[in-house]
Image 1 (cartoon, one colour):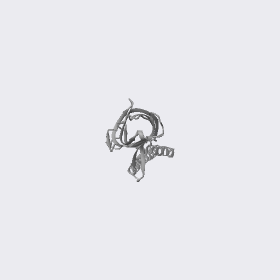
Image 2 (cartoon, rainbow, N blue to C red):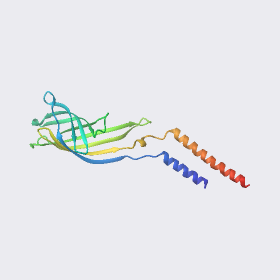
Image 3 (cartoon, rainbow, N blue to C red):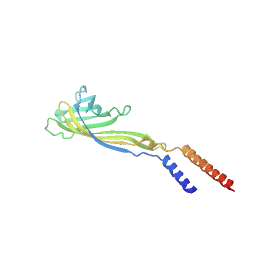
Image 4 (tube, one colour):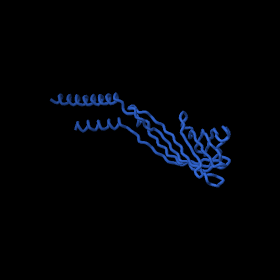
Length: 197
C-alpha cells in the first residue's frame, strides 16, 4: 500500500516537473493592395523606401530596395519587413520579382517569399526555433507600381516554457521534500504501531 502511494507521488512529481507545451502551427492567407512608391532613386533604376499595406485586420510594412524597369521587364524587390508591428527589434526578410517577364499584360504577375525566425540558445548550447513565419507571395504589379497580392502564411510558435529545463536544484529540493514527507508518514505509522503495543 505504501509502495503504491510512493509510486503515485513520484509519477505526479515527474509529470509536474516535465510540464511541456507543444508547438502550434497556423496556416492562413492575407490579401493586400497598394502602391509601392519608387521615389528615392539612385541612378534612375535602383530605388529604396518603405511602404505599409493594410487590409483592415493586419498590416505589413516593407523596408525595401528595388530594381524597377517595367518597360524592360525587370522588376526585383527585396529587403526587410514587419507584420502587425510584432517584431520591433528584428525584422524578417522578403523578396519578390516578376514571375512571367515575357508577358504582354498591363498587370504583370509577381512571386516571392517572406521569412522570419526567432531562435533561442538553450542552456546546453543548442539553438532552438521559438517562433518562425514563412510566407509565399503571389500577385500582380501595374506599370504605376500598384501591387495586389496575397500571402499564404505558415506560422510556427513554441511555448517558451518548453525551452526551460527543470534546474537540478529544483529536482533536489523536490526529492528532498518527498523524502521528508515519506519520513513523516513512516514516523507517524511507527508511533501508531508503538502505541498499540
